[in-house]
Length: 364
Image 1 (spheres, one colour):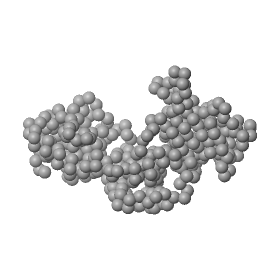
Image 2: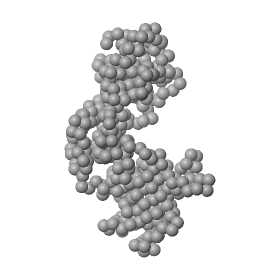
Image 3: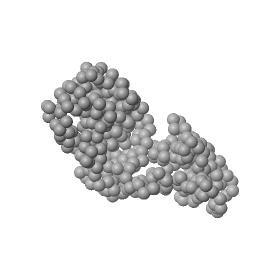
Image 4: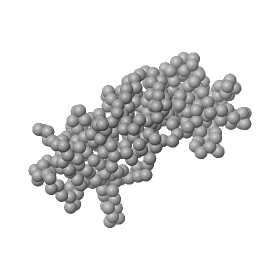
């Protein structure tokens, strides 16, 4: 961490500036250690700062160069016994300056030195808070009530399926992604330039903060809860053990996709199956074939088949066997781990797979 060229901190003493820059350097170094609590973040600030810390990791890297971008202290302004500081992550490419990100932090001086936090709590202090079961919703402008109802009802349903092990969440409904970034302290990040929707989130052991510009935000024109299933699953299951085609199949079944309900997706899948009675479902599954090529967004054979399988398994045996299939590991060439687990869970072998799909489809 360096002081930006020509930066002047006229309201700070030389000693304060020196201590601030020294501890900021420690803060930036600790950011790259995701499995450890950053000692430069006070315990009381860790929950609200976690999403920003997640965004800060890797900001210095460009390609294989881990230290291409340097964080420069470019501003430090006293506000209400705190400092609002700004870091600019910049490098030089072909002789020209290249800015990767601009970050704002709240710095507080204690008897042990400075601690640093996201400005999220400060910038949402006057917002309204509503409780929805175990979850809390925070907003400056009230979001659509029907969306809110469906959103939190879906969280309850997904969590119940997954064993109600997800941490309690604080959801901040923002007008768009740019506002969410600003509230969190991420003034600019080159990858996000022009982005209007999305989320900034992170979890702790017992809490979860979600800055929402993807579900309840007015910037989102289509209310689609598909990714909410993925979000809730990853709060209770390590991402590295999730088998994506099964995960996507569950999201199809429980939440639809691309604004389509599962009923609508199934109707399209049935139409494809009716037009291709001799389809080799195992080959189409392995190819993750798009069965609706005229659509703006792809609909995948492997996802739809898994939705059908999950529906039958859960109806007959509950969610436990579905969870086994969901966690058989990342997809590999030939889908060996998937077919091995599928046979264990359902008795369906790779050789009998196409016949199994045909068995599931005509009952509709």
